[in-house]
Image 1 (cartoon, rainbow, N blue to C red):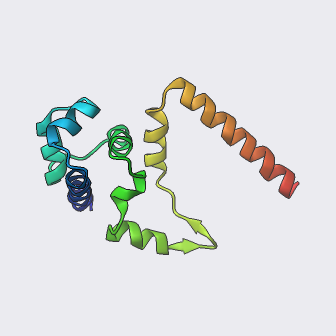
Image 2 (cartoon, rainbow, N blue to C red):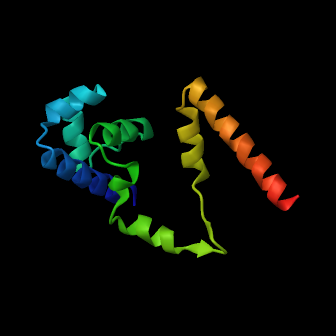
Amino acid sequence: MVNDFNKHLGEMLKKRRLALGLTQTKVAKAINVTFQQIQKYEKGINGVSSVRLLQLASYLKVPINYFFDNYSEYLNNLDKTVENYMQVNYNFLVKMFSELSQEQKNKFNKLVGNENTLLNKKTG
């Protein structure tokens, strides 16, 4: 599944890069990697870290879910809900959280604290 996703993401990256008329070198410089790394991303040889995915989405001016569009495993998981609860990949969330800056973690914790306060008011 991971290799399939890497290939899918690479195809989506290449499609968007070409649509914007950008070279691999230009994209590489924008996110501080080599053009060879962009080649490997586009061919699905290398996976893209969460931070790089955010950088690519930002530079290519697409929402991050653009890279998941039409990916069958992603679409299948959207359909697998139980009582409106979607399974969460907690390992992914932990990895994403660990890559945040301290300032971003503080903002996140503040938002989560506010959300818990709101939930307690609604249920309490």
